[in-house]
Length: 315
Ligand code: UT7
Image 1 (tube, protein in one colour):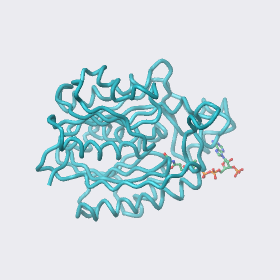
Image 2 (cartoon, rainbow, N blue to C red):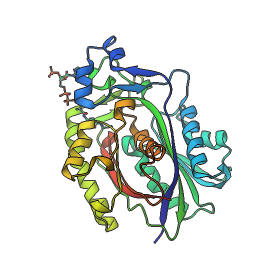
Image 3 (cartoon, helix red, strand yellow):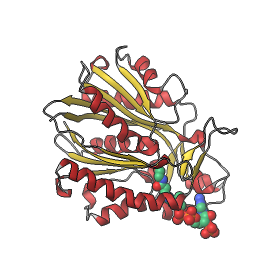
Image 4 (cartoon, rainbow, N blue to C red):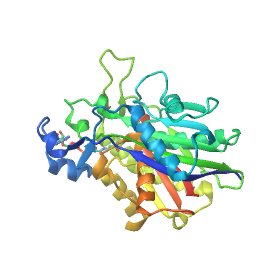
């Protein structure tokens, strides 16, 4: 047996709030449509802040809450596809900004909205081989840069934010037992890149993503439980990617998950892609809804058609 536990979590969202009423002034939309279809009321957009600023703030909070010094970190992974530079990666900018030792393994992972799950699983694997047993794992996105303001189906959905978790590896801890999937798809949901002439832009076939998500979520939850030998009752809290309140509602109804065992912050932040799961982890610790010994199920799904689930315990 070997695995990781979460020792602390932090998050950051830039101060500029964009309300549904603000959006009504620039696109053909309205508060009633956005609220009833998505659950979103506001989202935060960067103005002066950089992606690195968001990462630094979230990571510093997570380190403080964990009581861990930068020099104790052996692995630093940022899940993102919207960092300040294509190169250097966001994790190496954190190495510089936080003063992580220069032999810390620092790199980024792109698995869109499921990125944090891929990153935390990778950290668990790498920490087993690291001389320092603490890892820093982030999900951070500045999707406001990629919004297509001509597309009302997507421009109302996304916000900027970063979330971070400090994890500790120990040979006595249980593994996350992460189940991660992808089925490469460049049409359903994504952001264009260097294969396109125009600047990067978000594209999405909303209904297809919705149908995919409502199947993918329970299927990977079941797989994660089977893999770890746990039942739904062994889970203290469910942390879903915050893409649409209706997708979360369908999952909690299917598993009869009581209200005190799941959390939504999509109303405040919109869809922050890879940041959404660690943002929830951070808010849960602030609210005292999770603490030492709490077992949480992390569930992610989204762009590129990637999805997965894992069970993580708080130290
Ligand atoms: O994080 C990655 C994962 N992403 C997701 O999970 C997103 C999953 N998909 C969704 O959440 C939903 O599909 C949306 C919220 C994006 C869209 O909701 P929908 O119920 O699937 O709406 P729709 O795309 O079928 O559009 C219904 C109508 C259309 O009008 P007509 O053709 O019926 O006249 C759209 O043009 O709503 C219209 N519409 C809007 N109306 C007002 C689309 N966007 C807007 C808007 N405001 N912002």
